[in-house]
Image (tube, rainbow, N blue to C red):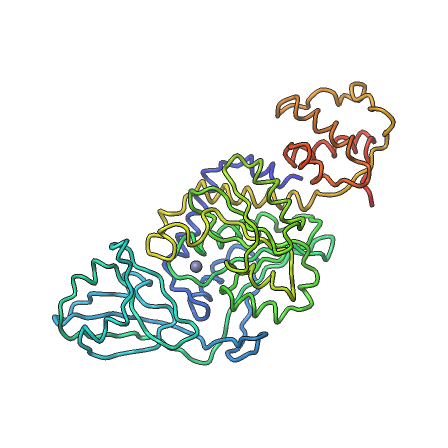
Length: 436
Ligand code: ZN
């Protein structure tokens, strides 16, 4: 398929730059699981792809949960006795514990301390903290910032609202030739954190844009949702659509310089698990395949036993394993244009496998067909001569109706793209027929 060829033709650094610029545009917004931050983010995605935005009212029951109150924030600060803002939301939105209830009071420092979070081991970084399901308020600041606070009375102000409203999420759907679907899901609920949420948003948006308007085998559904509660809400409200999902991927933390990590679906042997492993094997970057665990991102919900969907999670560095995770150091320098472009490339490779993986039948199974007289015993250019011809021999050998192209790519250790190209040429030469 031309998906990958087209991308290969583009200057990777130019594409990476575009992805990074989009993440940079989204970076300053104070997102949360509800409220105007995620709305504004979805509108910016909507400028690039046909995104439908849904609003689900507070209190709506969704399985064992309820859609929470909507949170919005305008300003927040801690003012020192001399009137100077020593902690200022306008400088960095991580300074406020996400979902903080409103507060405006003047308090002695020792009464404020229980509401302050720092990271002593990384004294210059601001932690990211949330309190979604327990009403509370708090500030986050660098440890060095806290050490500079002298005793005295401080004015604390969080100008936020936590009221009846809506949970907002975005969905982009492209109908393919089949109603069978591929689900791509990413969370959009973190404030100024680059790898953890913006990398996934940027890559998903560009992947959707790249697939838009194409003649595709599968239908594609992209979800841009608040983590956990968004996936639960979507699943609760889309029980019918869930039945169409054949393959799925959660994209998260795919902009840093680390190698790829793919966490398998709960099923562990789904086609998506094998497709991702095959693409990562040949992507030219380091990669590791991880077994499923019931913790992590929204694959937790998609893979819950009642659904058990074939949905895995593609990451670079695994959440929680690098010091920048959930801190102000997960910033725009932590994600790299080349990593973002490499991740988009890997995603397109995965889509390419899903779109083209099928079974064929060798039409000339009694001894090898004479490839030379069909001009198939010489490479058509490009790759190493050996691999291209080898791929044709593998496809002819294993195309007995039982083996898919993915089976052949796995067994031959030849990239899927080369195997699928070989199948196309052999079909053109009437040596191979797709199994219907
Ligand atoms: Zn996170």
